[in-house]
Amino acid sequence: MFNKKLIAMILMVCLSLGFVGCQSKDNGVESKIDQIKKSGKLVIGTSADYPPYEFHKEVNGKHEIVGFDIEIAKEIAKDLGVELEIKDMRFDGLLAALQSGNVDIVIAGMTPTEERKQNVDFSNIYYTSVQSVIVRYEDKDSIKTLKDLDGKIVGAQKGSIQEQIVTEQIEGANLRALGKISDLVLSLKNNKVDAIVLEKPVANSYVNKNLDLYLTEIKFEEEDAGSAVAIKKGNDDLVEAINKTLERLINDNSIERFVMEAIQLAE
Image 1 (cartoon, rainbow, N blue to C red):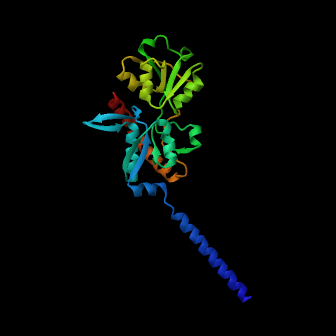
Image 2 (image 1 turned 180 degrees about the vertical axis):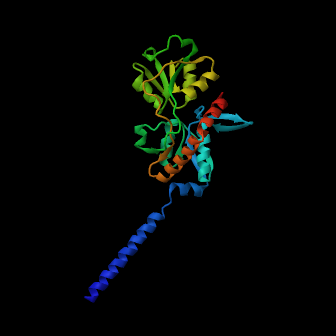
Image 3 (image 1 turned 60 degrees about the vertical axis):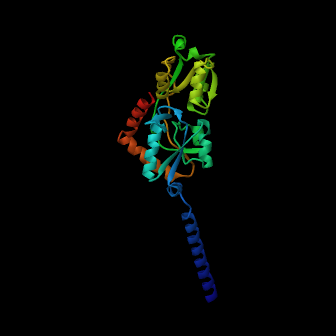
């Protein structure tokens, strides 16, 4: 009887030690925020050809990547207590870079579509815009409605929500998807596409710099679902931290200020 009690006690101690061991092992795994803080930097992925969100600019004689997305990223890094590192790449390669661990987050005017949500997590929406269409100035009287785009070649950034809009909402259009907005604009100027679908702030930026382009009044059935920060799945702590920063920036009107400053800088 004594031996049975002793064996039972030993088993309970072993089980307890095993449980504690498991707990310690779980708690020993570094969170994404711990990894970022240890590295001393937040690495973001973006596609810096999308003014006023992110774009290249000479500032005080120095080449920089600027835009309101970049200002938001700086605030996220500041709240985490680390420096900001920017990796510029094609838009359609951003989520692959995120999933492979090449970047910590993606901030690039990205819409959290249901398809993207299957592969990555997103922050809360931090900015909402509307979609628009730009054409050559000489075509402003012939392309005024969605019907006028029937049979036309319509450009959109590859992997973007605009690409989906062209496919789903412009009946009879022939999609031309390219990785960079600058290449799309060049294609429009060179008569290789007839129109481009862009977010309105981005469209305004390019039209203001190119007098041979024109912003139409064409409207779409579904407006933009907004922009959010993309985060690799399984990093709930980082999502929560980013949402906390975004909430602060929205509540004190910082994002609105960042947008206006970026628009002015892009002109």
